[in-house]
Image 1 (cartoon, one colour):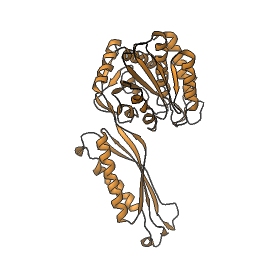
Image 2 (cartoon, rainbow, N blue to C red):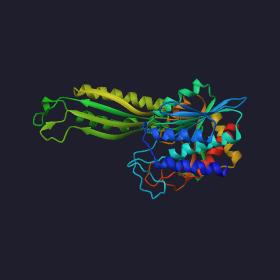
Image 3 (cartoon, helix red, strand yellow):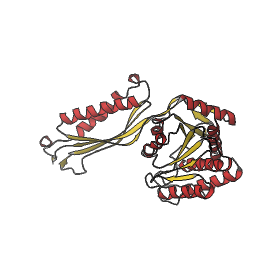
Image 4 (cartoon, rainbow, N blue to C red):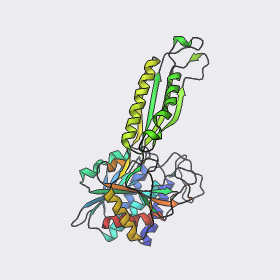
Length: 371
């Protein structure tokens, strides 16, 4: 990667950082990235509504390869004294998606200068944080008959610049579960005349440890209580409405699905026991991110060619990644680039994407194009 392109990509990252946008609201970000590529390259830029992709066409392509970067931000107030700090109150790039997009744009700059013997698709994706963007974008892979797809995420707690990867599951599957229980209101002095969901909600929470016992599963299975909301602050009225919000998480999709079914059955049982109506809805759904072994081998080979340190992850990351939608469609791999052992964690107020990773990732992507 040339110093000129590096400076352009860093300036792009800082501008994106200044103007963060939440999932499904990334209109400025998308437009700015499209304009940047149109100004600095001759790649085809294809608008897909909430997202877009850029395409480098080889003269005689030996294959088709894709890379993905996300560009949404988080609902976190930025307090760091950065010259390019967020100008959007309550919103900031505390997961590094500004750096992800800048690194992919750097690859576009490299392709403009040096070309390639493959068709290269650069996918700029919306709404990764809520799990919806990847499902939308992944359809492109089979539509365009792309052979393999790659992405990276910056990651704290590993040596700076290390390429962190593993065969198989890289990130957990997860989803948000909202259980709504509806009973019958009555005066607080005559609770026997109503239907109170508090007891059913309490039994459901109490049942969770028995559903996620490690000895009953081949991988990590978690069910995190996010919120319990039953009744109103009115001491004369017995509670009659309640909600229980849970985050389900597992290394393996089939074990997440099994946990979901077990909870659904328990909800039906408790609702029947207490005479309640019930409803379950889901949101923020992330499939497991499962790397293909051939693509993992290529990432390791590319890292070796560049002299980058490799770190084999002993187990999947607990955090979910909607790149899993892509890997359901075609072979590919997600890898992490280490931010540093003591670097501030993602989604923390102190976090800011390390600019030097832009060059590391651009060079690694380029090496993958050449393999």
